[in-house]
Length: 167
Image 1 (cartoon, rainbow, N blue to C red):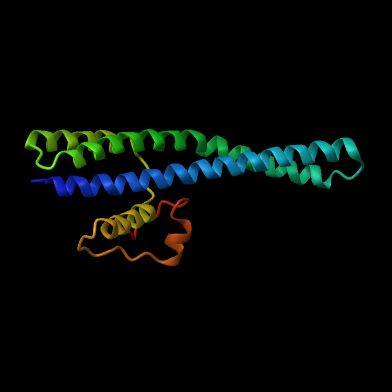
Image 2 (image 1 turned 180 degrees about the horizontal axis):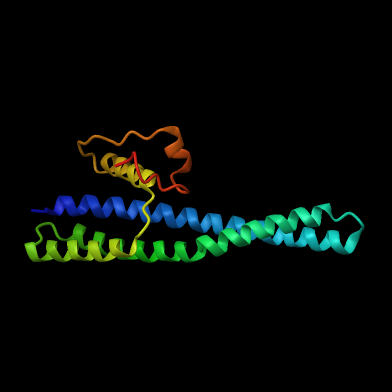
């Protein structure tokens, strides 16, 4: 049977995961927007200012790549989704922390809500999830074996799902 402590761990880990994911995606989106504005301005100034169009061509290439990334990966949408999931997890976290001795029915409802949230999360960033697991163990001062994460897991945990080899 799942206990309050089990649910607390899952919720704490999920809050960390979605907070970090939303933050990363927001930052990435902002940086892409800044580069888009600068690239567009540079291309425009080069086109109206002289014969050398090399800078304009380079800026156009960068804008095309960024536009394609934004179109394919829908970074703003993904950030908004993670923020929404974070709100749901924080609501559950509040309930878990304010119920010291929940009934089996309350625990069952929390588990149902967990699976409802996770049904929307299709792609998991496994290295990020493992890192959040490790941090949750530390934050809650629990005994447990942390997942071993290599340097490439740490470096690319926000951009590569690492479907195998972790967790």
